[in-house]
Image (tube, rainbow, N blue to C red):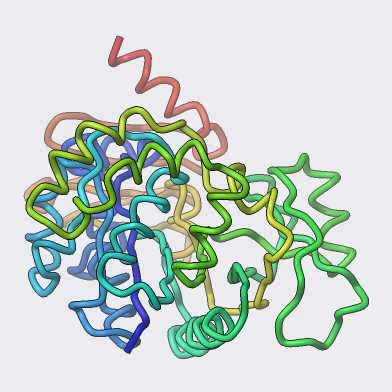
Length: 351
């Protein structure tokens, strides 16, 4: 079997402060309140397609122990540790070179660690379809999410209208996060999908793409390819990885390549990027509230997300459209419609 999956788990998830911190970021949290972290849920989906020995976790060095705690089935040598946060293009190139050392004929998926998939069977079907297409074709395959609203927080994938009815579309272009009017036009046209950051390609296809479109990243990382898959790999990566360009794989490869395809995917997807998106995703009471607390008295509260420590008694009255998050080191009470400010507030606190 030549199929592999790499799960990217190096982000900090600062928009979920104060629950998500640099020491314990979003992907390691039970953000849904079901007893499993987001990375655990991602792994449990992936292991239905490939064995645990074919799953790699790409993370920051500081999270190696956390990965092992949450995913004890993953071999320790399959936890790839980045010494610096250089965005996703170096991450993907490093992963491709490592998998090449394991299996030069491999086809692998790159998946985020912290997204939610409601329609799991449909998702697994689409992912298998992507693997099969990438195996048989020189193709970079993405899963395109059917948009349900004119969202300005996602990049968009454009396909030509002439391809309507096909199961896989040649991508015309990638579009950056639009303003609301542009997003509405995308939605109305029916030729656009959300870019969810889920990609499938063969080792050969993606390394050829780096050679053509982002050769500087590749030249830094393959200065000595004999180190990959050996006990010397980590020391080598520690030395060369910080020298790579800080750029996303979207900019470095996808927007420049002419062999990108997308599979429209209605899979109940959410990136859970903010507290507001979590509130939208979870079941609510008759007043529109999401309450994750053991003991609480909530009165005259509407459209609000409340998340509290298990040992804390929560009493709240008179809030509408708020986020309330209680953690041992911090308390957040913030208007939900202004949550985009939280990240900058946290950055100011750090200073």
